[in-house]
Image 1 (cartoon, rainbow, N blue to C red):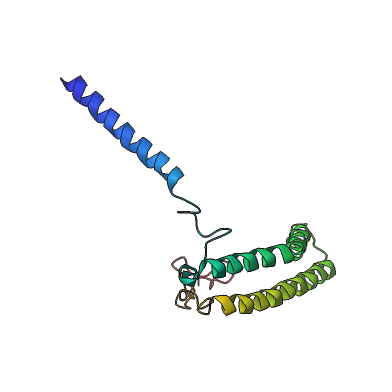
Image 2: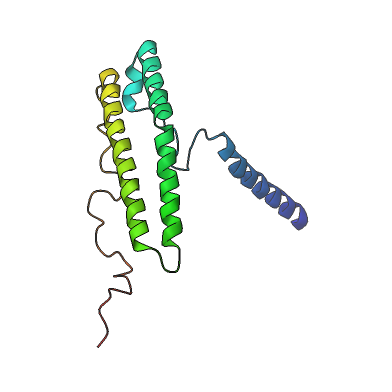
Length: 158
């Protein structure tokens, strides 16, 4: 009798575990893993007509296509800067030159993004307001945290 109870209990536990583990496969796009690429549309998207939704989606795709090369250049410059910075003795002038190029590319992308958002707001006027400050972006978490100051800046014990 004891063995039967143990077999039933362990089978039930395994089935529940299997259901929990496989259930995440049906969770949908990016569920549980942050926004990632294609986080979805803004709340106003649901109130748009089918034609407006099509326009909206086409504008998003156009921006993505138009900035593909620029985003690739930014990724390459970041990798180049990271490579320089991981050297035992990085070349300061080279690192600064790479950062200057990277900043210029990022500024160009930012300007294109602003123009894109203005075009999107013509279709979806409430877009861009956001959902508030989000997690830890309200300035309330700016202290040293529960771990205290970094070791390099910690006051020396007397």
